[in-house]
Structure formats: structure tokens, C-alpha cells
Image (cartoon, rainbow, N blue to C red; front, side, top):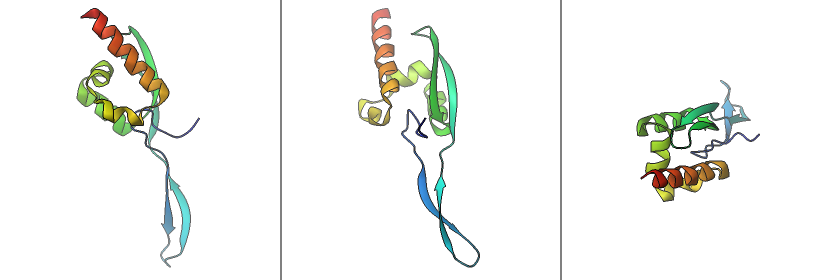
Length: 99
């Protein structure tokens, strides 16, 4: 499983450890990824995604998983994984059927 957030697209970065003597050795900065299960009210089921903590805060800010998927702009979905894009289409389709 790759270390990439399914919503924000955050992935590992590379950099250097710098010691007191200024020696540089390569290292990786890994994103803070969590396996998160959220309930989708429109789909009426649990949805499991691998998200960064930053993405979790963004979803909370929008007011939940369904609200996030409905209100996020199309140009911002380029970083979504294929599973997240599929879920977004399902949420939009089900919410339009309900209305």
C-alpha cells in the first residue's frame, strides 16, 4: 500500500538530516496517514479511506464526508485517488436522486 493520501495526494518528501557538524544524510518525511472509516448518510454505509490528518480536518470543516464530496470543486478533485473519485460520483448521484 502506497503512502499517499486519497484526498489531498500528500506523499513522502525527501530531505536531509543535518548533524551538528553539518553532515547531510538523506531521509524521508512521511505524511501522517490514518486509516479512517466515515459514515456516508447518502450511501447509507461506512466508507474507509487512507487519509492524512490534514484531509480529516478539511472534511470536518465542510461538515462531514457527504458535504465535503458535494461541495469540493471539480478542479480540486485531481488529487483524489480513483476510489475517492468513484465515491464522489456515487454521493453526487444518490443526492441528486433524493432531491
